[in-house]
Image (tube, rainbow, N blue to C red):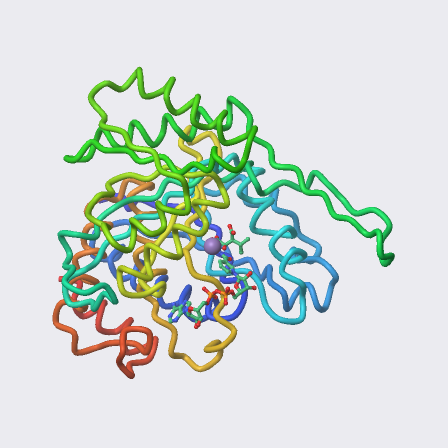
Length: 355
Ligand code: NAD
Ligand code: IPM
Ligand code: MN
């Protein structure tokens, strides 16, 4: 039998990225051996540490090197010592843009065995997907400062919403909603306070909705949407949001689903013309980094999303099932879940549950 090989660029990055990425890799390698495929991993040490010694997040390298890979597997970027806007705009955000990864897909599910902070809620109540616009919107480097250091100092930051950019992420969200039983899409807006871009977003949402009569739609301003997510998580199926709103909702979602340490994500180039990047929702967690106690499940489930993208569907399902088994039994729990297990113990438990 010929083995399928996937060329994957790996960027563990900073903090717990360096701990959870090797953990997830070992799970993926194990499942690959059983299902006749392998990942040919190419390591990139791009990180804040490299920035400290070279002055660049990629050292002498360039993100162009990622172009020839089938996928990018990333941990987290950012660490005290390098300003966040320097590290993130030196690596993560340029990758998302260079490879037109215009959808940031962040599923949120309360898994059996995991405690939610919401009273009287169970797995049936919390199961939605956030589709976050990932290339434009509020994240833009257009702007600047004037009169630096004086009392008249000012900073201006320009949001950018293009018809192409808005329509393509809305279309992805409508198409996704169509594949799910509830066929329901909620749009996050703020057209009461943001006078130009958000009414434009709403207009495009309505225009697109006319093409999808089979998808039920709702729209809420982001403030009350955040409240509804806590009080009525069962109202949500697919949520589409601009870059910043999607960022905030995708930390709130995992918080109600038990832990950010469980939350996977994918930066997708849906056209598949360029590599997509698979990265959990959480960051480098400097407060727990270096102690071997981070929860590797977010990174492992991110690996499952990558395997699905690489059309290793059976392997992806096996990873999800193994994680579900471990959580349902509840004997092995990392600190974020209320237990004392280490990253290594949780990884071993998932591998043991892989049959
Ligand atoms: P964070 O997600 O790193 O941490 C927030 C809290 O969640 C911390 O208490 C942390 O210990 C906990 N946590 C996160 N992941 C966990 C895991 N797997 N297991 C157990 N606990 C976990 O967010 P932050 O503190 O705002 O950011 C830290 C750094 O990471 C910053 O430099 C930030 O810019 C960066 N960041 C990077 C990414 C990314 O690369 N995708 C995402 C978010 C934040
Ligand atoms: C995320 C992170 C990043 C973002 C930061 C680190 C720039 O919070 O992936 O959610 O806002 O996109
Ligand atoms: Mn975020």
